Amino acid sequence: MHIRNHSLWIGRTLLSVSVLVAGGQQSAQTPLPDIRELMQQVQQHQKQLDKIRENYTYTSYQVVQDVDANGQVKKTENSEYEDFFVNGHVIERKVKANDQPLNAHDQQKETERITKLVEKAEKTPRGQPLEGPTISVSRLLDIMDVRNERRELYRNDPTIVFDFVGRKDAKTHGMAEDASKKLEGTIWINEADRQVAHIEVRFNDNFRMMGGILATVQKGSSFRFDQAKVNGEIWLPTGAEGTVQARLLLFKNLRQRFRERDYDYQRFKVETQVPKDVKVAPDKEH
Image: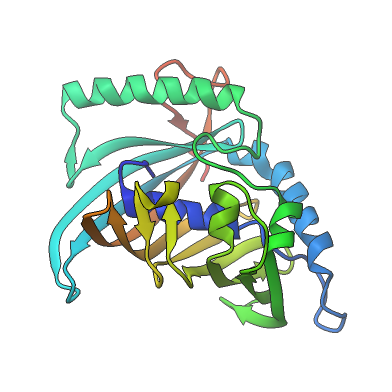
C-alpha cells in the first residue's frame, strides 16, 4: 500500500503497531501463556518464516472510496498490485488502475520506483519498516495494557484472543509511540502456528500527526486484517478493510473506506535473489 493513499497508509500504521501484540501455542487444558514472553516468541517465529515468504507472490486488489458526512460514496478508485517480499519487506508493484493495465509510460515509472524500493529493502534490516516510524515489542508493552485473555475458535482453528488498549498516562516519544496510546483492539492468534489470524484495531481518541498540522486522525477510525495458511507452509494476508476520518492541513476533511483482497498465491523460482526487472516466474506447483 502506498503512502499517497491516506487511508491505506493509516491502516498499515495501525497494523504495524498492533501486530506486535501477539500470542503463542498452548493446549486448551493449559493456562493461558504469558503475553510478554509469547510476543517475543512470535517475532522469532516470524523471522524463521521470512525466507519461505520470499518464495511467494500474490495479487492484492485494493479499493478506496471517498464518502460524505452521511456515508454516501462520492468517488471510488481501485488498484491492483503484484506483491512479493525482499529481505523480509513486502513490495507492491502496481499493475492496474481502475481495472485498466498501466500504459507504457506509467509502467516505466512504476518499474523505476520498484527498483529503488527493492534496493532500499535489501539494505534495510528485517523487522525495520521501509517507511515511517517503528517501535520495539518491549516498548509497546510498556504503553499497552493487555486484558481479557481467552481461547476461541476462529475459522474452526483454536486461537488465543486478547484485547489491548493504550495507556493514556504512558510517557511516549515519536509518532509510533504516540499513536499506540490512542489505540484499542482485539487480536486472534492461531494457537498451533503462532501466527496472527485476525486483528481489529481502532482509534479511541483523536490522534494529531506532526502536531496536527499535517493531519488529525479522528476517533473511530478503524482497521481489520486477516491472514491464512497457504500451501500448508506459510501465513500470508487474505484481506483487510477499514474506515478513516481525518482532517488534513487544518481545513480539509477526509472520509474514506478501504478494502483489500489478496489472492492468487504462487510459489516462484528465480535465478538471482532480486531480478533486475522485478518480475517473477511462477512455479507450476502451487
